Image 1 (cartoon, rainbow, N blue to C red):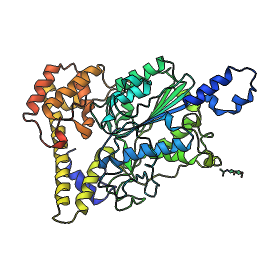
Image 2: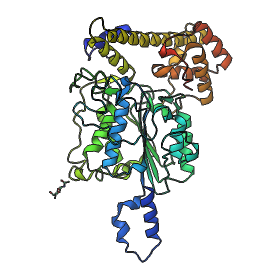
Image 3: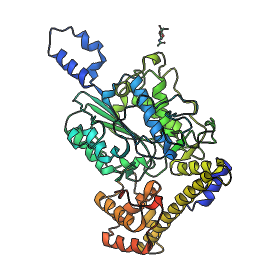
Image 4: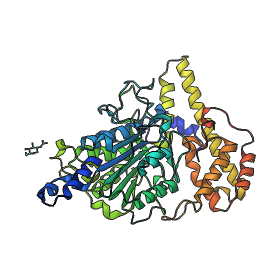
Length: 486
Ligand SMILES: *[C@@H]1O[C@H](CO)[C@@H](O)[C@H](O)[C@H]1NC(C)=O
């Protein structure tokens, strides 16, 4: 699908591929003094409560540069918007800025001519502290449940507004994490319901960039929680990396990796440029949808879920606004000019990195040999995963019906799977025999969900997996030493 619009390099790839607490208290105190002049809080925007943000990059590895760059850039926009560091919680593995591959050590950019977005970003949860458990505990304000990190949590009150932004790879019903297990949709929804039940926010907005990210909310996010979510893609399609090597606008030649993601940079650049008093969530949704939309050869459908009446809220309620943008209203400049003329499927962006590394390394060098080895390992694990899932389908449902069952997509509005515990159990069963699904393997999550929906037991799955994968795959890309992804 990428063949027609990208460089010859990618044609080769495709051929190879088989497939604010303080201010709130202050307001509260003021309210207790009825003699105070009412204009104090009419004119004071802090009467909206504190703005909180949780920003999380779900990946690690230099080839995933763009997800941490998105998150750092989002931090800069919120910070300029007036949010305080004590109210912005950042999760990122933090292995990019000083990676030996980074041509500008200590600097991260999120667009070809972009400024550094790394300086000043709070390192609340980095490295092995970027866990699902810490992410949920931070949202819930449950400091006791945190392990490691800064201990910063969303200590919000009933008038507060919360913004959550996630960027990474995903699959049906799942979002990647730089640690195991991954983040499953049912657990995220349970966490949001629990947060709602605790009465500690007025409204909450979630933006998610990932492949098949619509599946995180589709059929499972109820209305009435005062939660509004948008996702980079619908439940069945890829989301897209952008500002990639060899694209227009040109990425500086020293970068062998994509610098951003299409949906993420679309909202971040829109928020960065405008007076957010004048732009509603709905308006931003429309802008981002247009910029992320289906082009002839790439693009995805930006989706919205939850309480759509919140879309009348101004972005200012969640993101603040940069005082320097006061004269840039949404109406004056609706920023529909394209972000980038090209994009790369999330799932293939790592290949671009390894391929560019290989291509540029000097002939016969150790670097070239290593890059080739990395590339081949990634490719062979991909082929192994694709083949073993297909074979399992045939073993379980027969040669003729197997692929059909695996590829079934439920009608819009229905959840991916009826029994989420079954999904997680079968993922572990598969991984025990066939190696880690890893980043790429998340694309097979829907097939495993369909196996659950068809009523296959754990034992049946174990037998089929053992038959399909008689020997456990070797190599770092297939290893399970870091744990199951479910
Ligand atoms: C916005 O425009 C007004 C009127 O021209 C001007 O006084 C003000 O300084 C401008 N604000 C900014 C941040 O440039």
